[in-house]
Length: 307
Image (cartoon, rainbow, N blue to C red; front, side, top):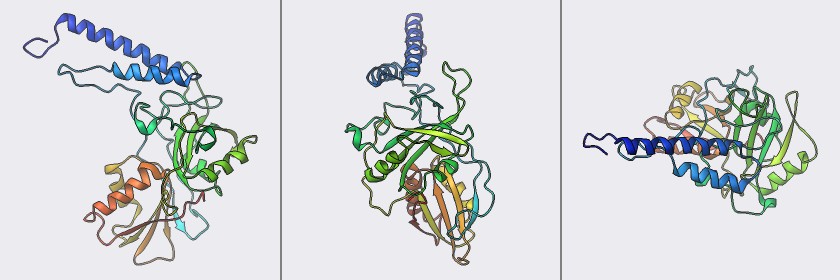
């Protein structure tokens, strides 16, 4: 490196070669879908060869980051035990790279697979609580998907991949999703139901298979869910304010938001996230740690509507 902090020609050439090698390995990862072992080796090599800046700091490359969106549209309704009463607005699918009908989970499906939380659990196949669902409607949302799988049990996490039709070797015209349940009995019941039968979502017959990125049962008491119940003054406990505060600290998906019609003062708001993991869990923690943003507000977990 020169005194002015720039790379000399030799170092610059080596850096460019590493960048090219990284891109080649990344493409290899994108194409590998049939060999989990080779997939893991390639992703490890590619990640170790990420570009570095002039100071030697690692510069993250596109395709290896966690994906998600801040909801721009949501369904809001009076909650009287029968679910939403007002027409639902359109949700944007989760902003994840992935695959659709007939595809396996891609290298980019859960973002950076070198992260421990995104790696497959070392466990027997029959203890897997995660499922990969293909053949979903192209505009499938968390609300549409979870409305189709009610009655099984608590949802730990949900991720939706929109169709991939441009700039890819294997285009898919339908959406795909990964759904993880909290506990094994729920997961087994779900798979037993749809192992040989399609999961009907909208007008599409979706296919359910165990996810190759396995997830063990979550070690949480039954009271923990993706549904938060906020009680407090109307000036604070309203969809606009709550959504704005949550968006400051986390990316999340919304199933729907409702107001209890029977509660007048204080107001009771039901916020149904797409996931407990990193969404409802994070939001509840934020409320407890930032009481100045939620004066007079109480929060608890409510029942998951998929339970």
